[in-house]
Length: 500
Image 1 (cartoon, rainbow, N blue to C red):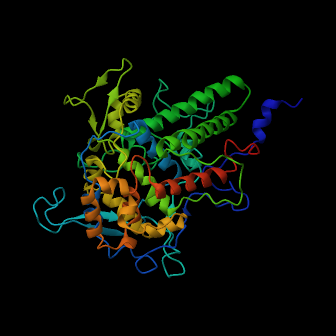
Image 2 (spheres, rainbow, N blue to C red):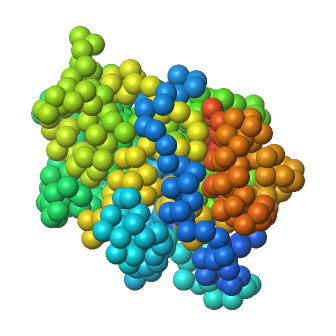
Image 3 (cartoon, helix red, strand yellow):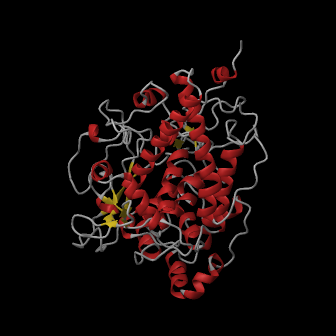
């Protein structure tokens, strides 16, 4: 007799690498696809040379327009939980800033006597910048300009949890009852004794490389970057195991693989729901258009404008410290009796931090902590003290964001607005009349810095300056476009009643 419980055996398994989601275009949304464009690339030579060769140094722009006082609270009472969950969302759909091989090094010029990077007034300092990996078949002529690669799937498919590789995932699985491997208590992932290639960047304040086996074995190679991101990764791993236990209880005769795949589908569905209908409205103060079904002719690809500019607005919400709060709602102080852990003291050292602090305390702390104000300013821990590449340097995230846009050949701010069907700004004040009326000196500084060339403003700078309390008109349009396409193009989307 045919049993309904065995239907799971005949349900299509969604691939980990994103292939064959769209049956007519099987590579759409898959790992190592090109980032997409709505406007032609604006490389200085039309092929691959960084855009904006006649624009000011990104460090100068960051110092002038993204530097300010730490600790200004969110205008909308957004919490640090939302701010750091944004990094989970980013990691879920894109990884396109990693350097290629061989590394292509450029320099971000620093003014002499820069207060952070050239205190000795040597005049020869610079911020190192690695250009992103790209398709080697591009960047050879104006007909084939450089195109960077997305090393994640474009789908919201749990790749942050399960990775994009079945071999990688197999190292994480117990192959019993559909569970992912954990410690004896079932609360933490196992350590990376198999040496899966997680990012093991140098800890800036330690000044030496550390053993990769100390890291927790998780699906995204970047999860050890900061304690908040690592806490979310562990929380989602626990959620998978909770779901797997429920599935096994309901279907005692199912195999490990059947339990695992059903649990994975439930976890992916919950992640899709949270990101699309809870996180994004809270982040943008705007909602995605209503879902009207699967659209096989919609391309889900992550856009250059999204990856290198719009979604980086979330960096303005990141606080310089992380509070920890226990089950009695008491805040936990550091060993040095400070109220919070400095973010810049935990870069790439998150594993050791969580060996001392339960993730519950970080989750409670983030939920109790107001994020930074939604404005062009970045807190000092990311603006001056972001981790650097292998030479144990510190870098400026604001400058890196501007430089990444130039690396990707993004057009200027006004051209980007036109590409997203928004009117061009005709005067400098039009970018943000409310802010510039409050701070006329900021308007004068912007005009002077860009030599009064309104059509030469970096899209990240213009987009950040038009934002106040939430992403501005351009960034909101880019984000809505991106996540609407990801949702509508996904054959396995949880609201698609025909997805099996």
